[in-house]
Amino acid sequence: MAQKLALLVSEEKLKAFTSINQNVSPADLIPSILQAQDIVLQNYIGATYYMQLKNQVVTGTVSADNQFLLDNYIGNAMCNWGLFYALPFLKYKIFNKSVVSPTSENSESVTLEELKFLMEQVRSAGETYIKRMIEWMVLHPGAYQAYVAPQVLDGQLPERGNPYFGSLVTPKQPYAWKKRTMVGTRDSANVGWYGGTEGCEPFGMNFYQAPNS
Image (cartoon, rainbow, N blue to C red; front, side, top):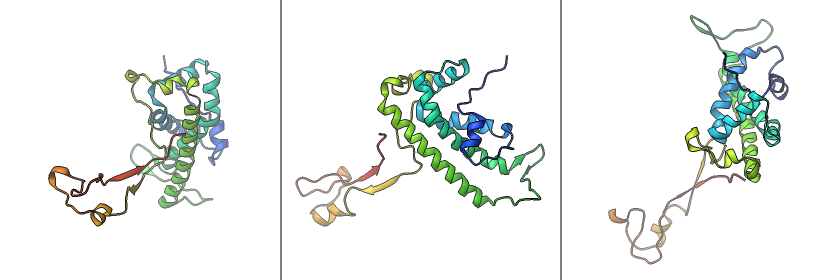
């Protein structure tokens, strides 16, 4: 018996919510949607809640709270992340003997740099919807217990960090602030501290991270 695949966004919504043309075959989109779900969505909601969602979709028993999240946040995020994973393979096709980039007599294919630009645009939109999804669940913890209290044995735990790609590093104090204002030296037994003055504190870096809510 073939295993049922749980798609958390429909082909109709994917094409209506993005710039994907209506003539694009579902066969070119479904693998990318499945990857977006398994890689991106599961990373942020955790395996416990992810398996709960998939099971409810397959059995047709989606709760009202989960349906709200699917309609307003998860579906929107997966439209963009699905397109993100699909874009390279809409340009490049893999055949038995080679990888080719089909061309059309009526249009010009985008360059690799243009493709990267498009991917960054849909990535940015996908990250925005993921952030909104997390904010909603954090503000309504009673409705999403599988996210708030995941089971460790189910697998991947939810990513609690910032859903935006990259990070910003800022200094706690201006460069060499302790060295310029306090007398003393940093020794091997007390790395990171400047001795010789009371009230001396460690000099380090703060990693800026946007709050989840």
